[in-house]
Picture 1 (tube, rainbow, N blue to C red):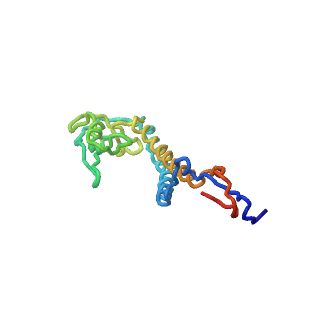
Picture 2: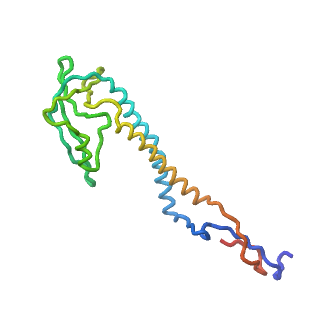
Picture 3: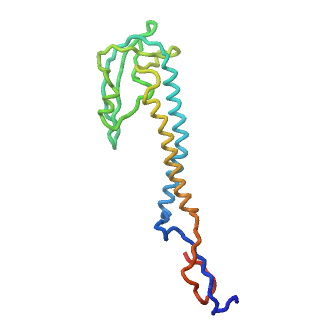
Length: 201
């Protein structure tokens, strides 16, 4: 009988995760995960576009012609204001069809290193006064480098967008699961006599 104080009430319960040791993220953490998840997810295709262009450039310059050149400077420099980073720095002279040029690129994906040893290893045997073969763009001889083609670095940079996409997708998935977590119905321990039907978290 509806409204009868003597009748046992139906108590409907659900599991919000707290009963099996799971806790929801706080609103601040949830917002932060959404922001970072979107940044990583949207940044992945953008960075992938530019990094893939570097990869294609490396494939294209694999067939550039080469002329003898002379390294006039080679070393490792420290950059970065807050956290020290290191990069290679080279300069070399070469001549194409009687015109003198100066170049400063080792390979297509010249980058930065977190430690000095990494930059020194990238510099390799390049030293001031060394004779090298300089590969140049036949359409624009002022564009040149010392190590053309696709190497480990050019392949490795293609992994970065995939990692970014994985991190971003994981963060958004965790937030989505937290928001729309499936609520499991659980029976109440005992019927509660009297009162109206209600909800209990």
